[in-house]
Image (cartoon, rainbow, N blue to C red; front, side, top):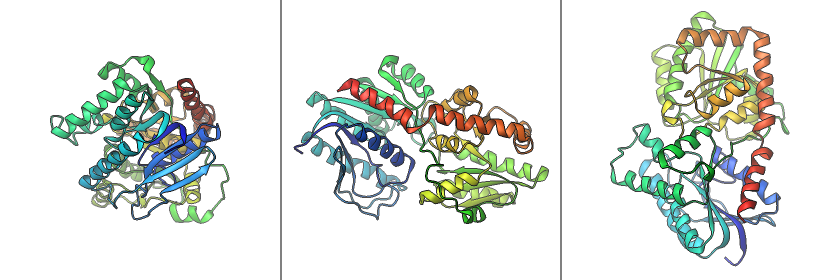
Length: 408
């Protein structure tokens, strides 16, 4: 490509994708392009969640932002071999196109595997700089969850690539302070090389169109606790515990409901758990793609549930947190002590963590949240205030902009 770019983003997830990573990267890149940075995004020509939908091979968003989409076959990311094949094919095509591209900074993350590693190698040869964004630290997180064997051939290769990325990237961006601590300690990386920039949410009240039909469809009479998001490895132990807590709550107060909106590989486990225990105050719905519907689903909840398994401490930060905070409702969390959101909870008081509480203690906290209006109001105010002060796109986007400008 003949055009010169300040920044090239290499990602599987981007506009018009609806999953969390797509929305975050789209927000960020559109924001940076408005700051007059010349940007190229290289992504696949199929949506990650719905690969049957093909996209334009090239799209010019504005004078500063181009999207080049590489052709990939229709592959299902929920099937292990197909997912790895997608990663491999995309990374192979990245190598060819990146060698021909004139850029000052390359920017990538894991997943996909292989892409960031190959991009860093090429950037080194071109004497360009490289930004490595750590949303999820792989393969460490898979090893911790015992999803893979640490001594397997492919995991050794991925571990070596991650180590190379952390050692040789110009800057590492983490979204949690626990991630920064883990990387510094376990990979012997200087703290000054690691930038902590938290994720964000768009203001879910912006251009909100009230739809009362959503309330009727998704919510019941009483106090409604919402979980909206993926139902996978990172969430399942805490979701299972909360489902069983709802069984106990049902006997004490049958006016409390748990609303689960989302899909994932572990959803059937929750459905089976509800059925086997004959729990009546839990309701399941599929993932919502329409943003206006999503806004209303969030609006009509009384509070939110945030799960994260203990093995994910230092590995990732649930991006759903910032959507919750933007609506200004309390957070009930079951997350590792000392993880990023646990630290934020203690600093800003927008909810509570039941991780180290007994079931009875957790239930009492939930009942207090429902019945004590002053307590509920305080946590709600703290939630919105925290969002406005710390977790807007403008706040985090400017941190990215300042970092990138310092490297140009």
